[in-house]
Length: 193
Image (cartoon, rainbow, N blue to C red; front, side):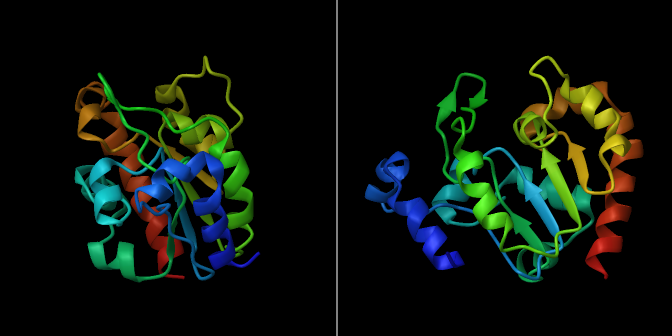
């Protein structure tokens, strides 16, 4: 299947029917030229409404952590974005609902085949980390992120840049002091290749 056929298959999938009926397209970015892949949770409501990935406060913080301008992030063709679910899952009392179970297993392999040049994959948050690093549910995000070097050079696990994680960031100052500069360095190296 080519990219357009995959996109159409996602839209036509019975599991996504309610979104398709509402005129909501799956939200992801795949590019053959992409060198950096970002795998996060799922689009937020603002991103889904605008049809633009990471188009919210979380996206601003993510770009800051990566050391990229908005133009570099969106217009370079070097960044691919493939969330664990391509649709906004809805809201719970504590933030957004989790991505649908097994959604990524169904669609990610088809899209990964279209991106042969990926050199660095950012795993943003626990859902992506547990799936791609084959972690047990008992594994703590803080420990995974603190030990990010263990997963390099291919995977780089980070905390989600959501404003809801302000408390975590204040408790774990090492993240922005140590991990973020290392992330910027890795992104710059791959991005400038």
